Image 1 (tube, rainbow, N blue to C red):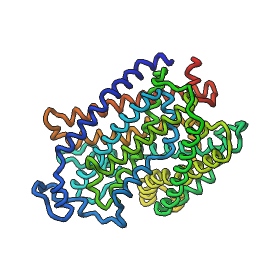
Image 2 (cartoon, rainbow, N blue to C red):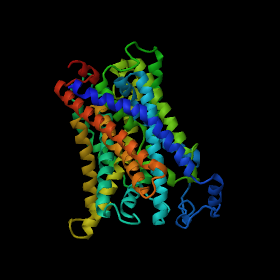
Image 3 (cartoon, one colour):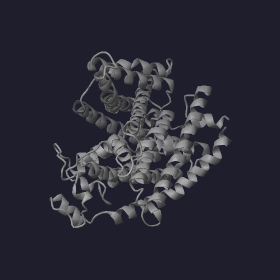
Image 4 (cartoon, helix red, strand yellow):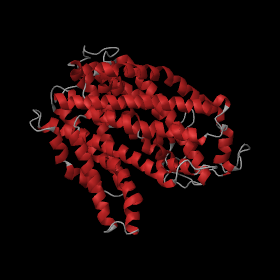
Length: 495
């Protein structure tokens, strides 16, 4: 089965690594050329229309935006880094174990550039749609629906169809992330109280359902935010403990420069996709900025934040892989041989941190189901009962689904890679690129460079995502077949 995957995986890996840098340089250059000058931007920030402003662009979302307690550029940079540096960061050594040290470093850098370019497109499209509908802000799903339903000549989709597509994508993404969090927590609990693994990790995923349900009963985002901040502090502390332990006794001798198992390369793609960004909060950070025009500048908040994330993911992945080689687990702190005080402290901090941020991941699917479906159905008489009852049912159902999925696939690296390949790649790259093509369908530029750029970025991401999904599904089947708790690199060598 490995031989069947090898040609497609190798082709996609080579194609991705060779073409991605060119695409990102093209994106950056062309977007810089088409941007207004800094003096014009400054004029608009001061309330003075620039000379090049057209009648369509007379409405400036930035000037019409009222932000409660706006955030500085540095604060926005911190929020961007905090939103992406989570469970995926601890899986980076396992990702490097799939491809080797050199491919891991180069591949993470190139994928980071591709994701950065796609997010740049998303923010710029958001600005264009705000001008089109004359609104100061639009959330992610509103940007997609507006692009698909408000074309000047003919809408691409009906509002109902566009909303349904976006809602399904968002539900799949955040329920998947929530399930990864449950796998993460249940694995740590098993490591701390059941080192002999007498009870399957799946049972621990079901046992913590009441605790997770309590967290999902927090209804206001303002109440979730302080808890999430505490969780992020604990997560950073746990990561520092893990890095110190990895460096304490020197590196191991089982690492390789280029991984020999080419059929595992797509798994690396899924893990990096999951680790590098949280697409749902990219626009929210821009909405809260004191100077939102600094977000997508060449040396703006988004680019600097993504550069930092790329560097920290490469650093953690390299250190963990050099230490444990192919045995690196989906949470590299669980590779510590001795469960001493600092290691136990780090694991407990991780579990608490992920638990505190679990509600934040489930907030979006609960909100979508409540406001887009349950409440309208109650008002039309389709559903019986009160909004409070259905709100309770939805919160119970979302928690239950995440626990069931975590119990079904209690393998952290595989679940993370699968969610990254399907959900994060779609929201962070595929959808922004599609919107980019649709927005510019009347003006693709000289030699149709925008169309070529969009199709190329879409093709690279789509091929990589399909290969990653296929590989992770095959590895999940192997996991159930062999029942192996060790790294799936060893499962792969047994065939």
